[in-house]
Length: 116
Length: 113
Image (cartoon, rainbow over all chains, first blue to last red; front, side):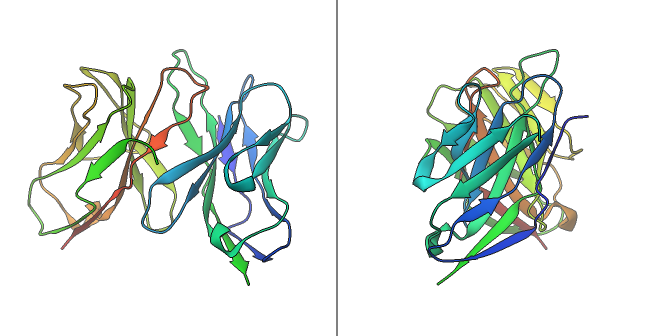
């Protein structure tokens, strides 16, 4: 079965410090991986994706993610956290199937809290 | 911000009422999705559509129904709302292909009293 796991319900980091939000996946075949962010009372905003190529993917707002095939991970990172980065983060993988559905399987979400 | 819209943003209604949550997008996307987001914040796919006159049930069973008569419009209807339907409902759309990201609307927060 295909799945995505975000092992941490919450990540706390001080402003200016680097941050990492973890994601591991289990899929058959090549994974298409995505990160989204959700601010309170808002929909999800797309941050970045890995389809193929360079394992380090850069996205919006200074975020980046590293695809590691051997560890089946796609951790979200930022070199220097901002208080405004505090939000709910979702990792997702595009499901495989007999049809090109584009359905996403989401992790359970990780709340990032950046303290001043 | 993506060009996908949901109305209303907030809705409080009584048990037994019929409601329709509106979702529209101006990007010409074939694929559209409805998610239910529970208090624990997990997302559950309840309906999706590949195009006009195409609708499928998602991974989470839902008493709601959807229709897709126009490419840009994907409304969700509850014939008789119950308190268990209280949730956040998110609509999304994407281009055809697994490599494309989904664009999300701002959501409708529904409370059934």
